[in-house]
Length: 405
Image 1 (cartoon, helix red, strand yellow):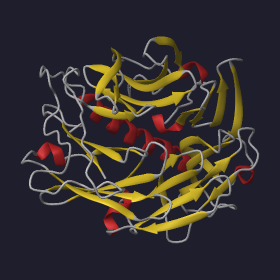
Image 2 (image 1 turned 180 degrees about the horizontal axis):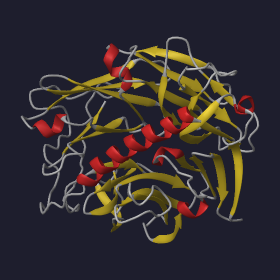
Image 3 (image 1 turned 60 degrees about the vertical axis):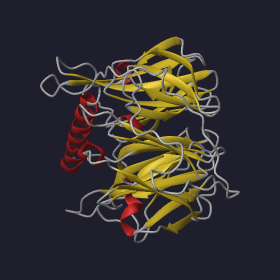
C-alpha cells in the first residue's frame, strides 16, 4: 500500500505541474490574425514537400476569422479540426474556413472526442480556492467536466465526473477518461479502479476493482494511467502500473499495457522485452505505444486489434521514439526532435514503418518555440500535417505550419 500511495502522489505531482503549465498558456492576445510564421509548403529556402504522386498540393487556408492566438489543435471529423484561441473554433481544412464556433470553457487542460451526434470535450479545472471532487483543499481541488456539443458546437449538456467519485477517490489525469463512439458511455479510471458510466441509464459499473485483495485477478495492476476504447468499443485499452505476481519485496511498480473487455473479462496485461510502453494512443484497429523518452530505443510498438499481435518499427534516430503523435485514424504517426536550428518533424506509415516525410522547422530565434514539444496533427486521407509551436509559452505568438507530405 505504501508503494501504491507513492505512485499516486507522483502522478498527482506530475498532473499539477502539467496543469499549471497549461493554465499559463491561456493568455489573451489582441492580434486579429494570430498565426505567425504560417507556411503552405516548406520553410523558406526549402523545396516543397512532395505528395504521394510527387507533386506539391496547394493549400488555401484562412485564419483571419480566428480571434486571439491559437493555443491548441485537436482532431474533429470530416477534415475538420478544433482550434482553441479566444474561442473554440471548428475549422474545415477543405474550405479553409471556420464552420462553427462557441465560447471557450475555462479549462486548464482539455481533450476532445467525436461521437455519433456531435462532439464531447472533457476538461480539467484546478480550483485553487478549495476541493471539489479532486484533491484536498490544501492542494487545490481538481474537477473533470464533460461538455456535449452538436455538430454546430451548440452545447447540449454537461456532466461532472466528481459526482461519480467516493471520498478520497481520484481521477489522475484526462488520459484516464475515454468516450465510446456513440457517446453513450464513458470509461474512466480512478485510484480505486476502472469503471464504465452509461449516460442513458445513469448506471456506473466496475470493470476492474483495484481495492480487491486478489491482485492476481487483475494481473498485478495497481493503477490505470491511460485508457481508450478500441476494437469498435468492444475492448478498453490501457497503460498501467503493475506489480509482479507474486509480489517481489522491494521491487517498485513497472509500466504495462494491455486490454480488457468492458465487462471485466479477458484482461491481458503485458510487458515487452527491451521495450517500455509509456504513452497510449488507441484506435479501432490498432494501438500505438510510444516508449519512455528518458530511455529511448529508437523503436515504436504497434499492437493490432483485436488479435493483440505486435510489431516494432525502427525509426531514423534513437531519441525520437519517445515523442510520437498519432494521426486522426492511425494510418500515420509523427515524431519530433529538437536541434540547434529548430525542430525535425518526421512522418511514418504506421503499417510498414516507412519514413514518409521529413521537415525542418526553424525556431526563428524565439526561445519559446523550443521550450516545449510541438503539437503535431496529421489528417490521413489528405496527407496533411499541422504543427503548432509555442503553445505552452505565455507571452509569445504561436507559430503554425501546415504542409502536405
